[in-house]
Image 1 (cartoon, one colour):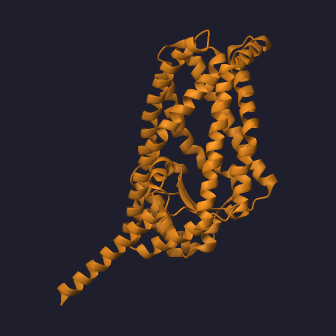
Image 2 (image 1 turned 45 degrees about the horizontal axis):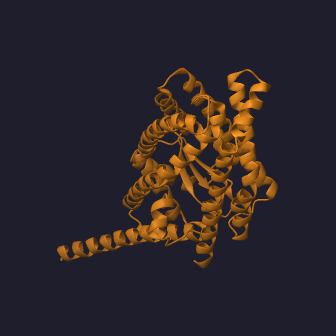
Image 3 (image 1 turned 90 degrees about the horizontal axis):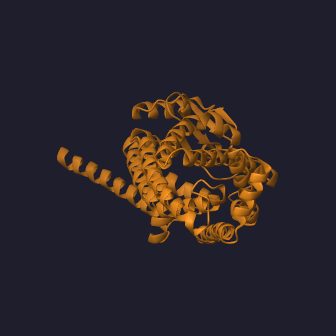
Length: 377
């Protein structure tokens, strides 16, 4: 527990440091006129509007990435290795980071180009952009297991016929169709364990980390999967997309007001001026921070429901508790974060709360059995 508390404390400090660097960088770009200078340079390089926006975004993004690189390495590589969570070689870790950066960068650049194109077309740009982002999230959810996951993990069908049928039978009882059970080679990177049900419709599949198969008995694997199936039974992907859609709509509406205010504040030629890109990024960052506890509160609510489904579907509270304890050790979970920290930062209920809830369920089942026995006599 001491290691977990120290690990999460250091992670939080590094996250706050990274946030401070981002805020300072964007403010400096605005207050020193660097945004104007970069936009002026981009206009001299190309007359194409989309090209100017791309150059400004790439240059500012590269500067931010370079400035935050030491914190990123400390937080994502050095610290997990220091505490035994990560054993991936630096080359492999760097390759994964580069792939993630290229994917995220391409999507981010496409988003910026879309926003600035809409800014020039219509004052209702924020409404159209929110609709496009909503559709894009649905598409990404569908293609995640087909195009994205294989870039980071080698997926092979589960070789254990008995376990595969047991897990698919659980999915069928839950009414969740899956095309198969696949194993991801997480052990090449980390000791952490997990399972997931990813994709939509014909792309939906069950994915197990090989670390889960190596360290957990079948009944605990079943309990972990039952939790993931609960999300699909409850329509949590749909509910999550709807919530994100509403938050995106509100965020873009507020961003539209903020961009208009930034024109006078920073001497921009208009809300579509590429020199205002640091202001747009700063507004997006601020709105994201405001939304963080709201999104996490919703996430904890659906996670509690998924826990309840797992307990009901398996009828095995002991296996659920055992899986939680084992996951806590492997993943170095913080068992008892402060209530404020949980509310703001945690997407799942604190581990002790989850175990306590399952313990109450086990006690309730035992009491029902005792009551049934007395009634029979």
